[in-house]
Image 1 (tube, rainbow, N blue to C red):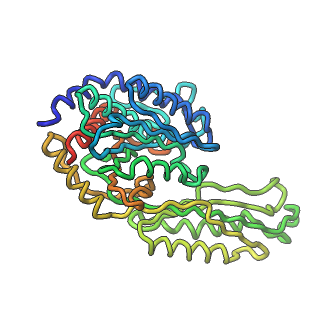
Image 2: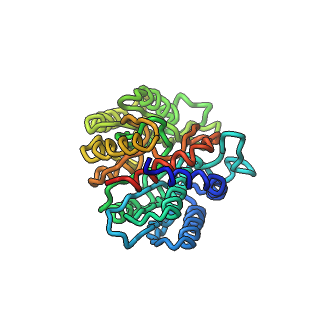
Image 3: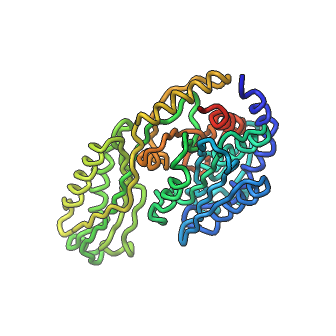
Length: 383
């Protein structure tokens, strides 16, 4: 087994990198908090600099800065790229006074699987490769800063930077939540539509003379929420704002509908449906303005991705790792953008765990080494 020494080295690093993961998850870093995201970046920068690795930074005015960390920057082989995001979902304090804690098998905290666990495993894999004297190719770690809002704040310049630093790679491995026995070759895209409803306000004692924007929103939401097919289109109306007082018929109500899709045909169906719902008034006297708030492309099954998958499958079998199959994923990720730009990408290299986007988010501690072994083996063995 070609990777035996490499795997033994990763096992020896387990305790050190449990602490590494704890450290970066304690830094709660919601997307909108640039200072907090940058603190995570500085942690990685300090660790990478101490190892003599090249650290490059794309400064951002609103989002956190993006980092590219490279070991073996002068090596002649084509690079392998690991990638993940430093930003998380929940506001600071959502996980309590002690945001990270462990039991015998799990670590709980913000970002342990989405996506700081994958970043820790990536760094662990690179550390092990270095300790084993690997110099055949550059290995890069790209630390994204505004993935959770679809890179809206940076106007996709963070994703553009990731592409510039990885455009000559032979493999782009993204470290969203890990998948046991599989890797992701397709993901859904996202369309987020904002519905801004205007009604006619009156005192609640004369509510029959008014036109409630909230009631109109409720009617629209009920119809939008009929899309719930995991295999095709889904819709979730997860954010709503409206009204000014309990005793006033609300003049304004705004909500956002999050649509997910796999194909271009499904995206077009979403556009048509959203426009129809916006144009239909269920409460007489109301009107609606529809805006596309943000969008993310779907990750399509490409020849490059499938060719990389077959190589990875062979590397795993030759080195005692699990047999894998190609699967799809319901979430949208940066791997979709990089696939669209023509890179060979696979998804699902992070830690195993659950409760994604939930204050009960957890990762299995043993999967830290498991994820690192997968990535290190690919970097070490890929032709």
